[in-house]
Image (cartoon, rainbow, N blue to C red; front, side, top):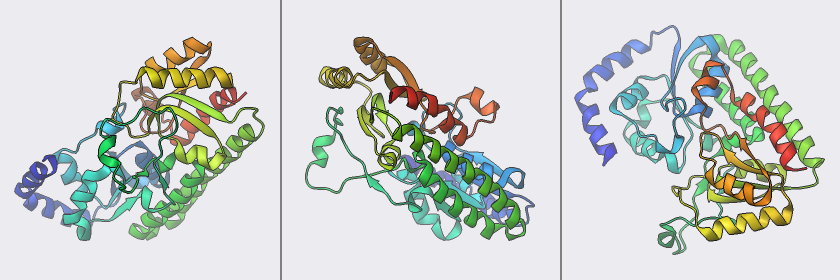
Length: 314
């Protein structure tokens, strides 16, 4: 197993890790490791120049395909705070933390908000291993908690408190930064609510994965999609395509969505059949190199969704 291999490599480097950890206590700035872009973005906007913030996922990479390297695990052990999401995609973290929980300060997004069960709506492509999960086992929770501006207000508040505990001398600075960023998500919440309340349509169609369960539930929207949010499937059946085309035609939707850093093949097939437009809905999993260089934030990405959402619902 990958984790066991990594664990053996870590054993060989334990002396170095212990030495570095003892030195890091005296560092002038916090050393914070974040797994993916949402975690990195939130920490960066709270700490700004008061911390060294590192993201494990490469910019522009597919978030669901990330696997940790020995170097990543050593970086986590050396950190003052490890910020991750939690959930099915972070299963390796839970295994890692079993042996390191008492040595690390951690913050998991999914432990700070109310969770929703992952769901499969009508027409959605079933998972290949679905038969294995039809024996009454509990549903997995949906891990994409950051896709709701309402959740982000809660997470930012609690993350700020965790950072202040590590560096109380800069409490006012962190709280000021956090409040400013929280205001941006409160503004987005109002804008999303206004667009949706004024819209004639309340259904979104995605020719792609659908990691927006928290978003649609918080704003009273319906949806149909090709795959679940963390689906491993890439090939879609003819029956799923036909179902989505029929729904799009019946509802007369003007937009078929895809998510960022994803192929538009399925969305284009549906859109061409119903004379609709393909548009991207940013879910915040990751950003492009160009967006990163331009210092795009999660709030910026969510703001970019507003005109696309308005067009899709009217």
